[in-house]
Image (cartoon, rainbow, N blue to C red):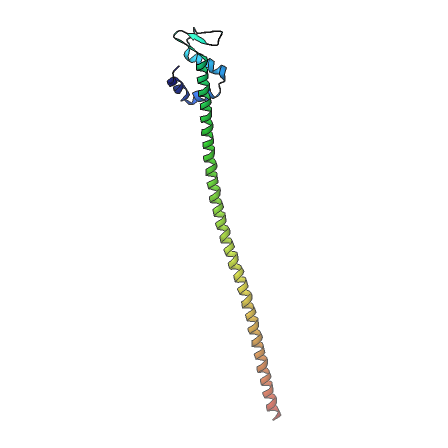
Length: 156
């Protein structure tokens, strides 16, 4: 068999699936069925002879190597696909985390503003209490002044 025939067979998905499942005996049987006419006969040395040529141990070894290469290529494709999937998941998670962090930062800012407002409300309340106390003191002073004037007028 030529390397073109091997390449043609291994280039199909069915061919790759078949190759991936072969062991040495399976490779021998496949080569025999592909390249030997029905009149082929096995010799004691494990060589399948047929008119026009024979499938040798070398052919079996070559097909076994082709199977190994296809298995490695399939593994690489699977790893690349998985890597791409995981990469997309990582990007999605990073975007989600960035949104969460942004929301968290916005929440923290709102909490800071609320705390500042609460502190300012407490200061305003204290200032109001202080002003009310001053107002009451003034009122008492005025009342006392009026009482004194009334007393002074009454004593006259």
